[in-house]
Length: 158
Image (cartoon, rainbow, N blue to C red):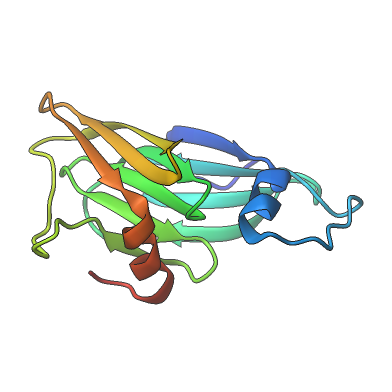
């Protein structure tokens, strides 16, 4: 799988059955269902790979900011990729339309850690999806994703 021009910092496999559960698609053709792989690199790109078509790249998302990617998680319910960055920001990426938004607080202020976001984890609890974020600043932030996902599906900025 050649494509990135820098070190790989994250790999995630996406089970297509989980994706179909999200979209509630009942017309699944098992002959075309394949796992997907997401990769994130210090070249500031995220790539979606198709495992059935000789590992071809389906989508390339480019982080146009100068801050390097430092971590990645996939949010199944929201259908979004979350990335942490060395400047402390957290972004949500829409694979279908190729855009991202910064996570912000309720007041609209850009919320960020004071240092590199080192780990991200998506978890579903009591019907809601959350993003847990850890940083070199010693803090953990928890974000409820449902409302943020609605904005990420329709816009490029919060």
